[in-house]
Length: 164
Image (cartoon, rainbow, N blue to C red; front, side):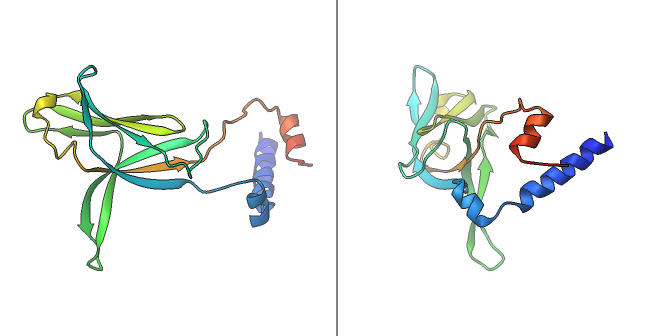
């Protein structure tokens, strides 16, 4: 067992120290991408909920394996230097309304759009426009690849060209 941990430590060290900026660029490694959208929700009577569809801009390439995160602008707060700073809340996000209703912002996505829904136990007619109009969302595309967890130890040694 000690040998396994030693091997793992050495392999990890070699893996991370052998990468250079040039190697990363050559492998098309890139940072996640973020965009913001201001939108109004529409009521869907068939589903009895509010929804909005956000199209991912054409200059952002999303792959099937990428992760999508969605944040809702909660408020703007005063920063220590006196400027404004946006406060974001990650979805899903719940609100417990004074009349006892509960709403929840949730989302689903594909590689070309994000659908944000207002779901929950609430009366759609009584829901105020502060929850449906001029809502600002920050969409974050996190690059990812599907993992191949079927490697044996021998295959891992050969793939990463490791020699003990």
